[in-house]
Length: 331
Image 1 (cartoon, rainbow, N blue to C red):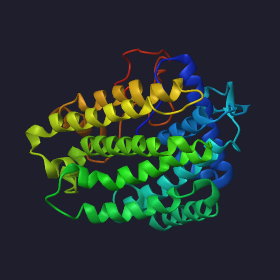
Image 2 (image 1 turned 45 degrees about the horizontal axis):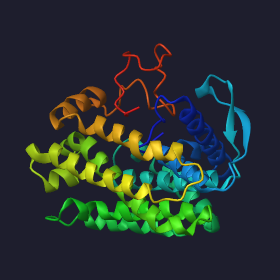
Image 3 (image 1 turned 30 degrees about the vertical axis):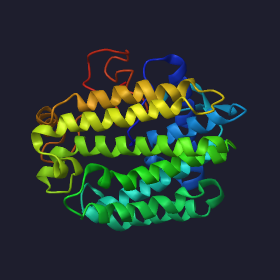
Image 4 (image 1 turned 120 degrees about the horizontal axis):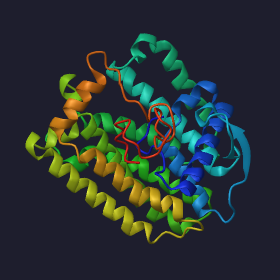
């Protein structure tokens, strides 16, 4: 699973809600976009599904399901016809296709070795998403357009960080705002656009910070290293993150939500924890960690977060909050 958000922290109730949407989203991707689309399962799209339900007058209906990642135990799963699940699945497929095209353009990762196959997959997901315009609405065209704007922006030297992050902010703003349309809460639309924009800024910021080492050795564009001298990057990144996160907190208080608890926790405490965990490492320490995790082959040696929705249960001992693994996802 990619995306910034991974898991929902140690609170049992929040984790159960997260899992119900996570597994519902996985099943919906398989049903509507094909089984290979389940590879695009996106933690940030799970947030969208939860946000849709939080604004809905009625709670989403659940069914029971089994999953190997949950030890084949019977668990409650949101039904795949729920608006938030359908929307989250569409956004996951869109972002998965965008990620593939980005890797093809940059000729990195394993994708160039099977470029035709991955290109066809991306095209199939985009075609299926295009047939679902009623559900995906404006974000369908906005995401693709802002990807093109992003490419142009990153070829423009001498700008400030917010210039480079703006395309991601715009796309994320429209994606979040559309949940108000689906939930029939038009009064939330403008506020959610701002919240989504700040979330997009944070996503772009943290991706840039985590990729400092890899972008440097592969001589790729990195907004932070392009804008700030190396010795100021951590302090400036913390400032940008905190300012954006404070705006999310401020705007969240103005939202009209029927069941706010889980999404409030995710957008405030959990996001703060994730950002603090990533930005708490200096660029030097981050470089050492990346050298250890990716090495010359470009493969990660992390023990958790790569194959499950939540790393709170250690894969080595099955306990929560242990010291067996070095997960830095903030949960």
